[in-house]
Amino acid sequence: MVLSTTTPPEPVLRWAADQMGMGASVIAVQGLKDGAHPWLLRIRHAGQMTQAVLRLGDPDHPEWLATEAAALALAKDHNLAAPRLLGVDLVGPAGMPAVLMTVLPGTSRIPAVASTERLRAMGAAAAAMHAVPLAPGPDLPLRLRPIAGVDFSAERRATGSSSLLQAAEARLQELPAPAGPTVFVQGDLWQGNSMWSGEEFVGVVDWDQAGAGHPGVDLGWLRFDAAILYGADAPAEILDGWRDASGREPDAVAYWDGVAALCSPADMADWLAVFHRQGRTDLNVATLNRRRDAFLRQALEKLHTEQAQKPRVRGV
Image (cartoon, rainbow, N blue to C red; front, side):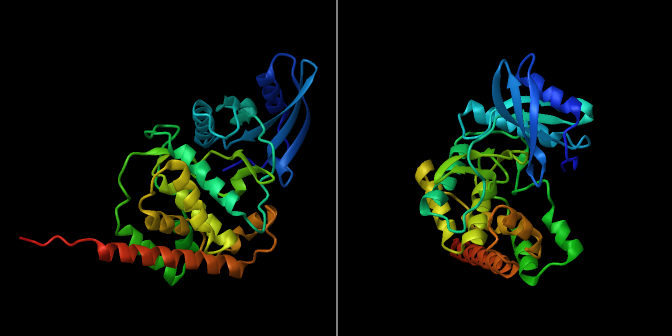
């Protein structure tokens, strides 16, 4: 949850300026999402102008910004393409938990047509994160699915679901989560959280869902995102980018595809405004629902095939 204030209070702006050095001052504030949070700050310090991004958190849930700060620190340690942390205060100036970070150049607007190079670059970016072994901890907890802060299953129970979603949820509940060592996962790795300069990948933003988990948490989410944005052929390019960068085959792809597709509302109309805001005004509800369901059906079919091909153990 994020505060809905439209302008950062003066104590918050003073705190942000102080992170840049003695005598620094904020001279301009621009809301990056509908004129509000997060904010792009222009800061004057020692006669120079610089920019930074300010994010505020919910005072009742400072752990979200603690996760973001920890993720950015880890990304710096491993030279991953992400903003650099400039300051964090989880108690927060004016009682608002705050994180200040550098600005990644470029844009997060999503093109109507994605090149093979763009999709593979996203897969490679995920592979770079997944090369970092990570045990779960207080600020970077275990992640078993994307967007762990939202319980989509509970939302569907409250608002209604579909027979496909119900069947998929029941099927996945029968299967154990794939075992293996945990790695650094971003937790909400989709096109709208990536920054680009033309066709050049710049980096990833919004790390408050990061943690330790199976690579499939990110890889399934990226593939699902590619499917609903670009159609049935796009997820394979994500996989190719990840495979080429990591030098190995991913495991349990169908399982994580299913997990990702279930991290969605029953009616994809709930996400339409987000996609339109990112530039995809060509998308409509019928297309999103159709593509989500097709992706989920394919995951279930692959799971069924995989289970059928497993050798059965004969009792003695």
